Image (cartoon, rainbow, N blue to C red):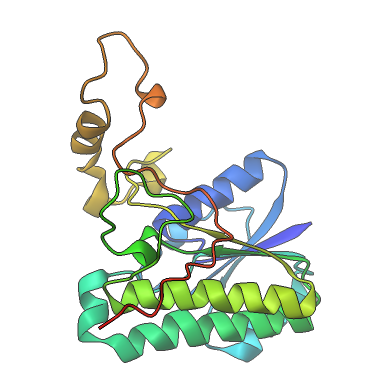
Length: 229
């Protein structure tokens, strides 16, 4: 099986590529390098530079590399910027996803994994966020991710494409220096301190659930949308 990793030269994408390589999976990276770094992509992994909105290049990439699965990470992802430029975010995050899904269906791709976001929840007044927590996004960025989930789910139902949408909160740190992102790496000590508050000395931080735990994947319908005005 060959996986297309869109945004594979990005911070999270580069980790996905490395993890798949370690698992013995073949991958090809598709990235416009607007924020991605080509050097993050291993030398033995093909890198195609192109926009997710370029239907022709997307289709050729799927065909040339005989892609059978897609992990879609490429997206605009700054909440504040999305408020200032909502049209840009809907174009890149929703129309770009539509272009990719259309090409994937035409190429008879078997599986599609969509990188969503915990931004679909907004600021829920709950102690623990679950997949059943209502989705009330507070920014155009969050709206595009929720719309993306709907589009992926609808496409899967209509075509038989196997799909999954992953929601996660902020991440930081790097598995290797080449994968580091200076804009977030300085958050690691603070995040670790918050996650380990109240953990007895000598115990494992991994056994403590943070106040708001991320859902690793979702099939939730998020019925409370649009948000009441």
